[in-house]
Structures are given as C-alpha cells and as structure tokens.
Length: 351
Image (cartoon, rainbow, N blue to C red; front, side, top):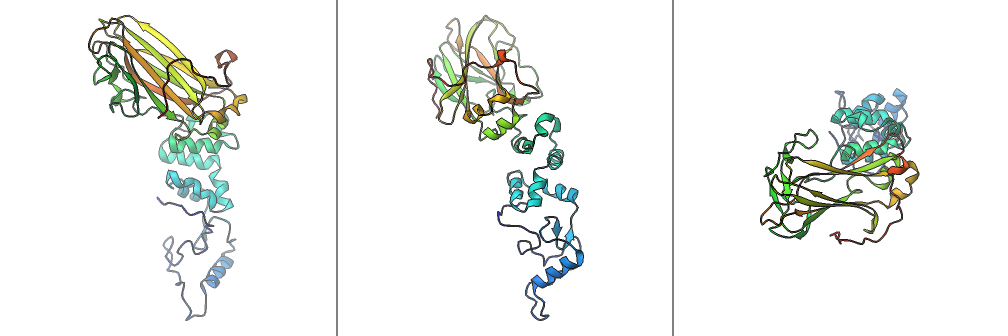
C-alpha cells in the first residue's frame, strides 16, 4: 500500500519519483549526477521516452515503461482511503480514471464491500463516483450513525438531559423482559439496554451528517433518499412504562428544519417492539438538502407506577441509517413543513 499526499504535478517521469532505483526488476538507472559521461538526467529520460514512443504526460508511465490501465486501477485502489482523492491532482489521466465506475468497483471488491448497496441509477450518474467514494470510505449507506446504540459503551456519545428518580442505568442483560433478538446488523455487542426510572429520564445523541460522509453534494446526488430512524423499547412483566421520542433535523446554525414526535404508553409486557420513522426526500428537494447537517435523536422514558428503582421504559438499538430509494416517495409520505419552525416543547441543546 502506498500514499499520495502531494498536490504538485506528479508526472511519474519527473523528479518526484526516484527513477534511479530499479523498477519491475529492471537494471539500475544511471545516477542523477553523471557528469563524467556528459549525459544529464533529463537527456537520459528524453532518450528513453523517445525510444519507447511514450508521451511524458500520459499518466500511465513509470520508469519509461507503459502501465496498462487495468493494472494502474489495481494499484490505485490500494491507496489509503483518506488519500485516494489526491490522485485527482496527479494528472488529467488519473483524474479521469478516479471518476470511473470501473475503478470504484475494483475498490469495492478489494475492500469486500457490496457493490449492490448503491442503487444502479446512482452509480450511472456522472457524479455517481462521489457517492461510491463516500460509501467506500465512510460506509455511508450500510452503517448505523449511532455508535453506541444499546449502552455497551456506557453512555458514551449520549448527552443526558434529565436524570430523574434513580437515574439512567445500563443493564447488560435486560431484566424483567425478554432478551433482545439476535441481529446480523447489530451483532453481539448490542444485547444490553438503557433503563429509566420512576421519574423522567431523557438523553440525546447528535449525528453530524457532514462529518459522517453525508455532505450536501452526496445527499443531492443520492436523491431520492430517506434518513431512517428506529428505536427498540420494552417494559417489564410487572410494570408499564411511557416513552417519548423526538427526532430533529437541524441546519448548520442548529435551527430545526424538520422534526417528528411520538408518545407511547405501554402496559406490562415482556416483548420488545420497534418504533420507526423516516425523513423522506424526492429529487425535487435538491436545494433543500443543502440545509441539512445534524440529526438529533432524543428518547425519554419512565415507569407508569412510580416504583422506586429501575422499572421504567427500556431502550435498545437506537438506529439511524440512510438509504437511497429507487423512486420518489409518495406525497403522503413527505413532510409538509420544509421551511423550518421554532420548537414549542422541551429544549435539548447542542453542546
């Protein structure tokens, strides 16, 4: 694996690469300082290029030898994820290669990423390679944006807003209800849960979509798409609970531009249930996507019988994912308020 970090022209045939070293098992090259022969290094390079009839700026030449395009693709797909876009600054030929679908397919194969995770209509767009890069580097369309969904990392990533009663607690194994079902998406780390008490316990998780690879350009190219949120919840066999759920989309100034609220009362029951909601966007929302930066995921719970201890609502597998849709969602599935508004309920700040 190698790294390309320079933004300077990288013509392969110039002094950026040490051509004095053997390449592909060939003989050693003459040193840069070879005045005893009267032949300068530039003379040597021009002679080799002329002998092989290779244009010096074709982008596929190394040490005077032409590299087949598929081989160059194979080499470049091994560049570090964070440096791969620097290949755009090497030359026009490399920039053209980096923006090809065939190159990114090799990158996906090399890293073991499913090619079909990105819909065909997105891959075929002229700018589709940007979405492919985002998924290649950030796993944008296959990950949970909430990195601590069930408390296996304690409260890391979450901000506690209210901590009433006997306060929040993490149960490594849910008490008084069924265990969480097995899931290939969440894995063995997410078998724990958060549990509330006899007074309101609330906390929130802020996702910076831009920092997670979902910047405005990627969202625009990926339209139509949905930002899908889900929350598993449960009560004990002997005590009911109350669950408040709030989802907010914020702009870069942290102003609410979309939100969803849900209120759930549940009697004593041992089964886990899932609340789901999706913010959906169609192709005509391209300009609106420029506003979206943060998603705030808030849940709040308590028990319904005011029992001391931790008999309140349980939460597990908080989840935020992004999916590119095959077609525009129906009008009935879209939010009616796209202009932003002031919140009228609880105030969860962005720290």
